[in-house]
Each structure stands twice: as C-alpha cells, then as structure tokens.
Length: 334
Ligand code: SAH
Ligand code: SF4
Image (tube, rainbow, N blue to C red; front, top):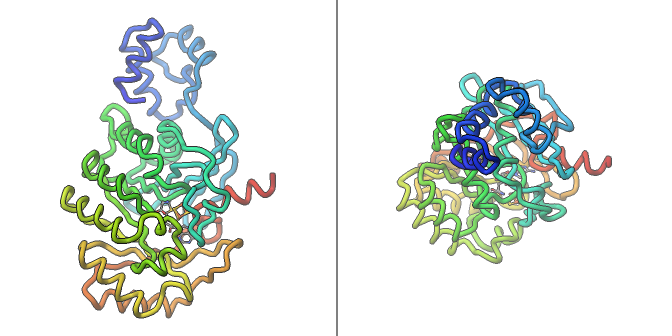
C-alpha cells in the first residue's frame, strides 16, 4: 500500500489516519516483522492488528550464498508459492533482482522460469517484500525486474510497487534506480513511457531478426520485432533516456556475424547500451554456453560498429543464480 492507502486503511478500521502512517513508516524500519515490532503503536492495538492482518507476505524458505557475495533467496508466499530474488552487492551498489510473477507464460527456450508456464501474478506487496527482505542487511540502491515473470504482463502491480518503494516516508528510492526488463509487449512499453518515464527499460532482444527470435523467444510470433520497435520508437521519443538491450548468447543459435551486425544496427538506432549475457546453463534445455573466445569476438564485432556494449560478469555461478533455477530445484525436491 502507498502511504495514502495505509492511512485510509487505518481509518477503515476506525483508527486515526496517523496510525496508518506509523504502520507505513514502521514497516520500512529495520527488524519489523510484526505490528508488535512497531514501538510507537500501543501494545493492545499492535496485538489486535497482528491477530487480524498479515504485515509481511511471506518468509524465506531457502537461501544460497555465493563466494562472490551474491545471495539468492527463495521466498515462500502465504499460499505456498515460491519466489526467487537475488541480492547482488558491489562496492557502491546493492542491486536486487526481483520476480514479478510465479513462473512465466512466455516460455523462452533458454529460461527455467517459463518451463511450467505462469501460476499467478505477484501482488505489489509481494514485489516490495523482495526488496525489503534484502534491504534489512544492507540498504538497496537499485532494483532490476529480471527475476521470474514478464513484468509487463503484471503491469499494474509492477508500477505500483515502484511507486511504493519511491515513497519518501518509505525507502524513498529514486525512480531512475529501477530497471524493467521485458521480452516485448508493445502496448505496455508505450504505457510505461507515459506513466513512469524515469524508469529504465531493458528490452530482451536476443536476436534482431524475426526468424531467429521467434525460435527462442516465442512471444515474437505474437508481436514481431517491427511492432515492438514501433512501440520503442514512441517510448524513446517520450522518455529521452537510454534503454538497454539484453542479448543472451546461445552458442549455435544467435552468434553469427550476421546476428552481430543486425544487433549493432538496432543498438545504433536507439543509441542503446547492449548487455551481453552468456547463457547460464539450465539442465532442461539443449542450449550450450558459448566459449569465452566466441563471446569476446561477438562483443568486439558489435563494439567496432560504435555500440556501447558490456558482457555481463557472471555472478553467483555456484548457486543456481540464473532466473528460475533455484525455485525449480526446490519444486523438484518437493
Ligand atoms: N521476462 C523479462 C524479465 C525477466 S528475464 C525478460 O525476459 O526480459 C531477465 C533476463 O534474464 C532476460 O534478459 C533473460 O533473457 C535472462 N535469462 C533468462 N534465463 C537465462 C539463462 N539461463 N542464462 C542467461 N540469461 C537468462
Ligand atoms: Fe519469461 Fe523472461 Fe524467462 Fe522469457 S526470459 S521465459 S520472458 S522470464
């Protein structure tokens, strides 16, 4: 809930609005798990609220810590659904990779999240909780919607979560610190440019020709590149901000010179930053992780065309850090 909604919620319980504000502020303080942890609330009221309402929507069910500091947590929501989120600390940043849905309907051939389709959307509260969970260890600076799910298929809750996290009396995060990654939903790309122009858009391109892309990103058959790019044209005119293009490198699928050249052309058109992601092996797929030399050659060919490009450093290689992997392991073990 936003601060205004939390105030109205308190009023709907017959309490003064400022009690709602105390709950809102208390939730974002370290160590708050129950209403009783919010010390400004009278004890009796806190007990009544704890008996009747759930303050935190889930709990950690499993955790993996990588030697490089990456922490992947599997959160169990109140209905038993499992949601992955990853904390990625660097010297000056603490980035959280969050899920927007349980599973994913898109079903990209290289991704563990889409193997069983989508089970349900996450609520705005369940999205906020993933950030809050890790924020308690170290203040969160950046949020990327690159966990399970297609965020633009859960548009309202994703935008709401961003707005709640930006509330000055909550975490007060700047909107520019959020990146929404999408497989390409034209209508929602346009809408995001209007509703939240400060949020960064990352488009999971993975191939810049329809034939290759339709093979690995099935949503491309519904919205081919020309349609997504029409929406991106409108988006970039509206926001005047650089977008990111993500490109998973799949040996033998999307790494020829022609693939590199068509990627470079799209990147130039939008003056976009390209993020190459060497495929992180998922046991159920037939894709192969490319050799380092092939990755470097591909990157060099795109860079030579004047494109700003980085190869994503692999973090958490020892802990199932690719999206959907930990949840899958937990489910297969029952
Ligand atoms: N559904 C959205 C956001 C979540 S996926 C989207 O597709 O953009 C976030 C990123 O993780 C995508 O770019 C996706 O291609 C990448 N990804 C998924 N599985 C991967 C894997 N096994 N190895 C490397 N990158 C992967
Ligand atoms: Fe869904 Fe993104 Fe995974 Fe594709 S890569 S299946 S869109 S989560």
